[in-house]
Length: 254
Image 1 (spheres, one colour):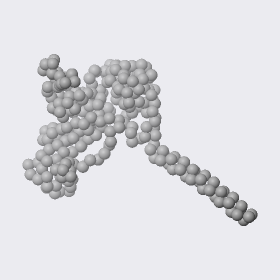
Image 2 (cartoon, rainbow, N blue to C red):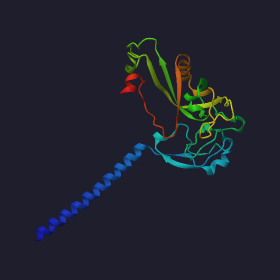
Image 3 (cartoon, one colour):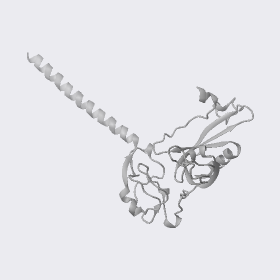
Image 4 (tube, helix red, strand yellow):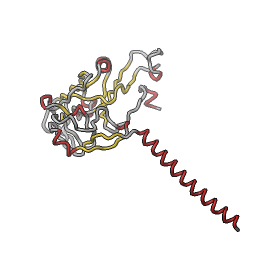
């Protein structure tokens, strides 16, 4: 009887110890996972803020949110300290992170444009409406830049050429991500009644789109505009940052 009692107590004790160890292990695993995600507090817009609004007036319209490092946009602000004399360069919308380049000195404020980040330069290309979100693109947007082209002959096999291009003439590639749009110069519709069924004004022509890029990437965009075509995709704070392959026919039909 005593042996059975002691055996039962021992089994109960082992079960308690095992449960405690499991709880400790799960808690430690959660902590390790959280550390790997590297959460950081950044300022996020909580209500619409018009361009030209002073920093003092936007304090109640932004809030600090903890985001994982991979979801944080470069130049996202963690505090408004040191920004007191600035104003918003563009309209800001709920859910977007507050970026340093979207706050400018009043004398640098130019409606419809945003300042060029330090170390970058401006380059402008002419695009048809369908290549720039049907004309909905605006200064301050972040875009992906896709360059496409067609070779006169099938691509030869040499070391610097991606394997997926060898043997094909046509190709398309996402060359750049998170490219800042500095300005968009677009013609107005030809007629005031140029609207679709939902009453949205339809653009009737191309537009000049200006990007902020380093000199090397600007050269690649110029090459694409000269000898190929350019297509833009608008990115958001939650857009996936991937490394897609060069697109040729096999990638499209697989």
